[in-house]
Image (cartoon, rainbow, N blue to C red; front, side, top):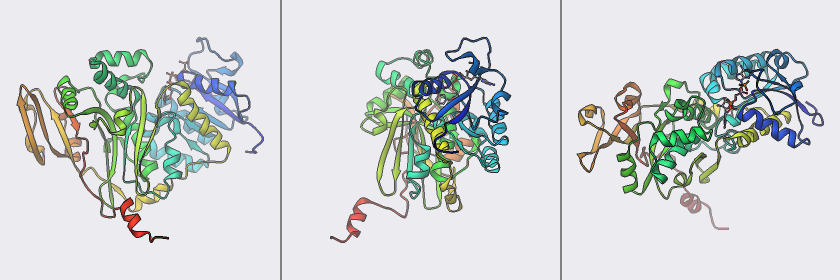
Length: 418
Ligand SMILES: NC(=O)c1ccc[n+]([C@@H]2O[C@H](COP(=O)([O-])OP(=O)(O)OC[C@H]3O[C@@H](n4cnc5c(N)ncnc54)[C@H](OP(=O)(O)O)[C@@H]3O)[C@@H](O)[C@H]2O)c1
């Protein structure tokens, strides 16, 4: 693609994200992007775009030799997959925001993309406006990160913020999130931790080169959190967040999960409120860093899509530099994590499944167990998913130190004075 020519795009979807993309491009004619056609589902809807741009016939985009790149921002993951695969087959670059479609089809999408020799970028699909995936690939290319902790779902973070700060019930807070358009069309994707899991599958690929299948990554949402859990957190100067977590547990293995977690009130992630997202990265060399920003919304999401379109125009494609780590680093669920388990009836909890019990409280003061349990056990069992049970990890769920420890103090001690 020559650098003085505009890149010609076909846009699938003209909803929250699609309209944001259209608005940014039409307000900034100097951008090197031209929208050739927009494909939508419903021909009867009024659109804030010229009628000659709109079609419901996907072939006007996918078979159009004038179009270099397909932007896929629709709300149906099966149809999205077909569009993306057809675009690859027709030699067109693709930019997508559809995390569900990508996480569910990761392996085959990467294969097809490689065979077609086109670019496939999807920054907007993981934390919308936060520049995360390209940074994991490029900025942290040399850094086999110690850990990542993310608040990657805006609507659950909004709900938890309202529960803690305004004492709202879960149901009322969810209704408010839906009213404000933060929740996915299917709210269970957000509330039960699936949306966060989809994004985390993408993040783990770019941070560690690990390609996970859905069933390998443990996830629970915030639907079972009760007043007694909120009171427990407040008593300990903590809040509760839905945390997507990944940690190197030794030089060869990494573990990860998406679970509600107690977060100390003075930790950076406790300051992430409402629909905002953040990812706390623990670098081997730079210590802790936090990427923070809007994880949803029309213009924030569209800005990441447009950044990707321009990156493609400039010849960029993901090269997955961390995939070479996969030779030395493997994923495991055979890891103990420290958990709090709230309950209504103690006999509902299979105490023998815990590898260690620290405390059992079954009184007016509270009803909970604190102990350690293997992630693999949780994956195999269902008791902890019951609505009467609330499983929340402690603030530091894994207390392991990797052998090869890099520390600022060590670094300073090793550097000879000039
Ligand atoms: N909203 C956000 O903040 C956000 C953030 C990050 C990622 N995402 C992701 O971005 C994608 C789009 O989200 P959204 O919020 O923009 O959805 P949305 O507001 O519900 O809009 C969806 C659009 O897709 C169109 N569509 C559906 N099926 C289609 C098909 N088969 N062919 C052509 N067009 C079709 C719809 O057409 P009609 O207009 O005719 O109904 C509509 O314009 C989703 O995958 C979502 O997970 C969204």
